[in-house]
Amino acid sequence: MTMGTVLALVGAALAVILAGMGSAYGVGVAGQAAAGVVSEDPSKFAKVLIIQLLPGTQGIYGLLVGFIALSNIGILSGTPKELTVAQGLMMLAACLPIAVVGLVSAMHQGKTAVAAVGIVVKKPDQFGKAMLFPAMVETYAILALLVSILAVNGIKL
Image (cartoon, rainbow, N blue to C red; front, top):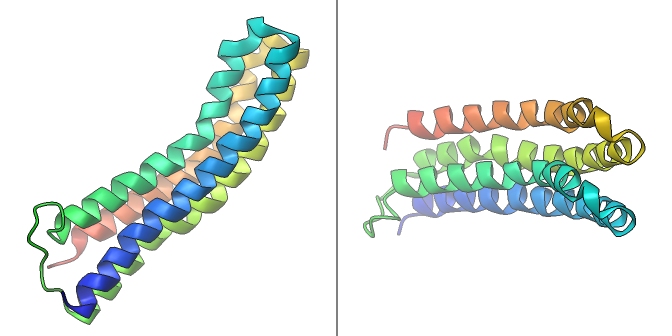
């Protein structure tokens, strides 16, 4: 396996690991808030669960980019391509947008989801509006996902 292939693998791993870490944090803090609500009013379970799950999407996005990168370099087929260092660095760079933005946006989305859970506690009828706040953070994760997918698929291997 060449150094370029190793660098590409590092990029795929970072996309999965960092975005996944951000999602784990975001879902965790939102889940803590949601659990407190459900302990007091179990009828709000469905609403707070939906809000809690929002920060989990960045982990899915990182996993998607990781799979696309692994597929493009031949790891999933069992015959890895011999990438040059330049190709490996390009693949690493292509995976970084979702890795970094996924990490940061999921953490902030989790904090925003905690605030949205607070809205549902006080005004359950405002669930739709409460969902908009964490959903706005999602916009930047989607932009990073698009950049990473376009970049990963645009590398000539």
